[in-house]
Length: 402
Ligand SMILES: Cc1cc2nc3c(=O)[nH]c(=O)nc-3n(C[C@H](O)[C@H](O)[C@H](O)COP(=O)(O)OP(=O)(O)OC[C@H]3O[C@@H](n4cnc5c(N)ncnc54)[C@H](O)[C@@H]3O)c2cc1C
Image (tube, rainbow, N blue to C red; front, side, top):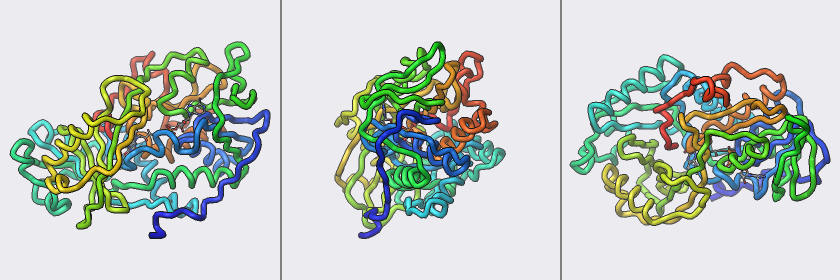
């Protein structure tokens, strides 16, 4: 059972300095990866990450760990493919076992319209650098023998897109690997410290007010997940973000083993198997915007009902645990990453229900922006001002789940 015990991570905690070149608010994957790449790629180490709870306490420690690049628009495919490639090398780079497993992802179609959508996904993915092919029922059954191709007589499986590079990685190990790598190079991470306000000089952000005093900063980065609206408003920014809860659950162990990740756009659920053998299920966001972390029976009932329709073996398993995160949903299902009109204040948000896979590329690109002052070409389309310029990036391949 050693595989599930992490004994080696070396996290070093120091007292805060009064001033840093860069202060990152939020010790989730995006904040920590930004710090890691600032240190490793650009030699910037006078950097602090401030986390109000423990690192990974937010969505980065609550997600269903799906990594994929089979998005619906060129800008997203390029970005997520970069992230997928960085993930594949992360164990070698950090020397830490993040339990990265390539599993392949099936995205099922249950209607003519669904088949067209999955064919289109395969075409656009291939054109812009992600590996996705369209497969018929016979191949689907070979990849995932547990699927009932009749869909319980209600949702027949007519075809699917198959993304062989779809993968999972253990979420808290990703967080720890980035934290350790950043700390080893001199970045300071301050946990159990809350940012309560931003220090402004005129129109510029020059630091943060915390419950342990004020800290000045050349640049402040907001990486606070579903809590971004409150932090951005301290800088006078109103964002096109709504925070919605997202729930997930795991069952007890399914001994025969379940290889791929399976998703259905029509039934709006997805499923994979954890390394312990639990079946891990997620679905769409709660419709009502809220900051609530409570989990409900309604979600369990509705998600389980849909999943059992396609995977009848699930009805013999028991629900072990259920949990919730609060997601920073953008209106076009694309991230918002980059500078803002407030000098010294940068944002990485709009990661909604899909930002775990984005952690390596999001951190890498944000670090380059901070270090060089220039917005990298890869994230330029994802700037905040796209909404004012009518250049939104509606992405059906993101569409609100995993
Ligand atoms: C149930 C669920 C399933 C998901 N499944 C997937 C999936 O399969 N694949 C995928 O790609 N994505 C998935 N996601 C989305 C993904 O988890 C997130 O998009 C991603 O983790 C966001 O990372 P982050 O670093 O931006 O935010 P977070 O990980 O939420 O980190 C933000 C941190 O900021 C801290 N913070 C907030 N306010 C303050 C403050 N004032 N001062 C100091 N610290 C503060 C919080 O405590 C938190 O730790 C899922 C999310 C959920 C909830």
